[in-house]
Length: 80
Image (cartoon, rainbow, N blue to C red):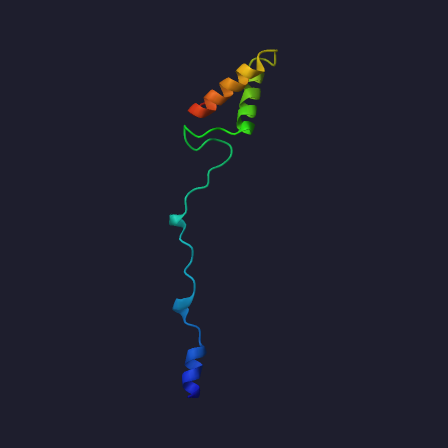
């Protein structure tokens, strides 16, 4: 009987949790760019791109709303 109890108390190596399978995981999207062309860019992304447009214009006064809409269009289409 002692022998049977000793066998039962030993952990079964097959009962251990299987290691995580990495091939089943989907890649995590970053916040720096939309993942597809229909994804809406974040306000931070639009703001950064609008500022880049402003700087490309030489920092001269212009229409900030126009810069914002242009930046939003470019990001939605996946261009920069």
